[in-house]
Amino acid sequence: MPSKQAVRLLIKARWIIPVVPANRVLENCAIAIKGQKIIAITPWEEAEKRFQAEQTLNLENHILIPGLINAHGHAAMNLLRGYADDYPLETWLNEHIWPAEAKHVDAEFVRDGTELAIAEMIRSGTTCFADMYFFPEQAAQVARRAHIRAQITFPILDFPTAWGDGPDDYFAKGLALHDEYRADDLIRIGFGPHAPYTVSDQHLQRVATLAGELEAPVQIHLHETAKEVSDALEQTGKRPIARLQELGLLTPQTQCVHMTELDEQDIGTIANSGAHVIHCPESNLKLASGFCPVHKLGQAGINVALGTDGAASNNNLNMLEEMQTAALLAKAVSQNPAAMNAHQALACATINGAKALGIDQVTGSLEVGKSADICALQIDDLANLPLYDPAAAIAYNNRALKVSHVWAAGRALLLSGHLQTLNERDIKARTQVWAGRIHPNNGSTP
Ligand SMILES: [Zn+2]
Image (cartoon, rainbow, N blue to C red; front, side):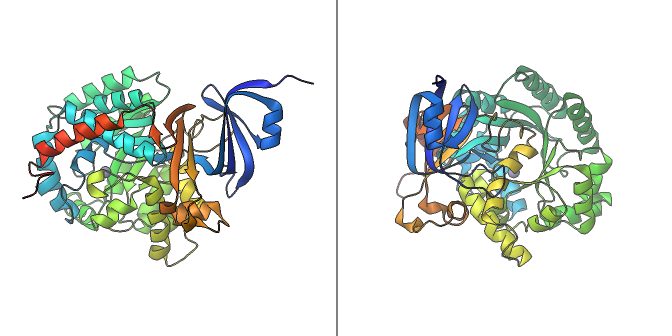
């Protein structure tokens, strides 16, 4: 009898939705993990015959899915959760968020806010996030410590901020950071020009040139509101998408966030460029920014990923909820209940995110040879019974699910609901200190 192959971990699960191939639900299968990678997905009995595991985990009431990918956010803004609600984007930014940031944001704010955000993301099944914020070196360090996968884009704006004196300083610091993480397995550094209305042609062009040379990702807020587009037309005579295309900034490395105000020509330009769209439905709904026409984008062959945006405009970083909102909103906007089905919603939150971030060879699906980035959802709550379709339970009824286990690159980040790489008590204590500083009345009765 041939000897068994040694593996580190064998996860036996009631259901597995690998996402690739699409629309597939496997029953009573196991995932074998060796080192950081998935080396087999096979029926239970077969797995027991083939593998000698250091550890075997029986998840008999669970669904395994790829770790979720939150493709857009500002993690440190978790410290501004609930700080300014119910304003439109311009008022929210100009009168509330930017003044609060000017007053409070420094390296410590970003370190502590990012840690709070990562803890929240891990607990809701996310194994990879894309971030755009000041002091990106802090975010990268926290992500590395937490052992979560991340794309950290350093911000480029035309004006000075707490992080730097202006564009030259941002480029110098950002490029040094890119260099530092060049060989990192989990963290990738990219360019984060904030938006067409905060970055001049000269600096957008510089981003395009450098990102091309370094093969680095670029993430930009784009066509977030109708006003952004009409103001741009008034000031430049061009729609922002047309301007970015002229500047050479729309490429397969470009991630366009929001995209609510799009005409047929805009959609054609994006489709031809190979750029990706990051849809943030809850942020768009909350700021009344508009609706991203995801169904039309899909028909045009454009890759659509999902992001939560920052906690200040959401107010959480839960990708399961974002998936549900995306699916329901796509149906409403297109007046077509088949506009985004449960499997498509799950793909937006996993493999499409990996494609947008340029890491789909590594993550985004449960496949042999890919990184063991896995989320386990416990599904024995009566609110999910009877369970005919696990994908539908995830997309349409995820409040009745519990994220129980999470692994990134084979390492456990969450076991039976407990964080493994971060200290929850410590994070809560530091958040309370910040809450007192940012909003002095916080926690006390008036
Ligand atoms: Zn954003």
